[in-house]
Length: 346
Ligand SMILES: Cc1ncc(COP(=O)(O)O)c(C=O)c1O
Image 1: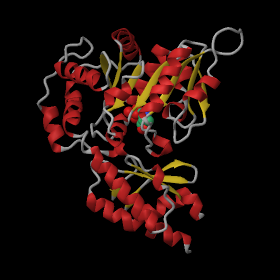
Image 2: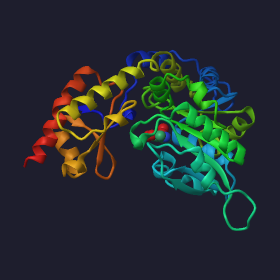
Image 3: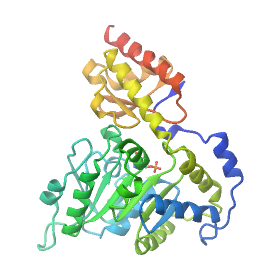
Image 4: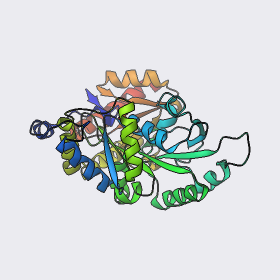
């Protein structure tokens, strides 16, 4: 089975497992794990911030960011299909007392003008002041789309001017950096806090980083403990993170090239793919445009030996990753049009 449901499906390679087996470890809660400390040092450098904190998941990273940047009874602005909005179970409200307002985005992006027009400032007794804006880069549900650096500069500068704190959900920041040719530190360094996931395209079994100033990361460590994310001999998995930073970043370009090959091949075969949206490792197929129900489409594609997943009603996606090689792509190139074509012509 060719599994293109998500880049979260990667399994640690033999070389990564060997690096894990060799890891020096210690008590992470006591900040005595040398491998975690080294990953945090590398993470801070990579993300252009003073300090980074190692975490089990990127969801925890986003939730910690909202807890330390937001203020109870104020508002979080976020694009309406962002992970924080649609896939974190209302955590902003539950953990941090934030009211979330989802704004319509263009390819997952919010503009500085939109922020200026929507943010509420203090000064009356009824509207919740906007305390945080969070953005996602690359943007998952928009199709792995990438923010131009200039737009991020404008948005974060406007936020600062308005007294609004900024968070980057950079679960796939390295995809965005590789695709745009902009160093991750230039992107993530614009924000008060930034998260990076190590278990997606970077291929680790688990792990994420949050980064920011020393003062914010001190608070992040407190929240990490409160969320139950402070660990013990975590160096055994942090070693996978170090391995990934050394070996699995540049190769993301190969995932992007394979996504483009899939998109162009499928489009040529009459499968509705918006080639413009294919900027990183995602390819979205608008099955509704073919008159096919997405569940039906996924089942038929599965019968042909390929696993895809649903993005939103009527749209399914393929996500390339380091466990999907050229042979897998060749198989998917023919299997998917066949599966959808068969359905269309029934
Ligand atoms: C954009 C984005 N942010 C955050 C996450 C959360 O990552 P995790 O599963 O490590 O909590 C995901 C997971 O798919 C994601 O796509």
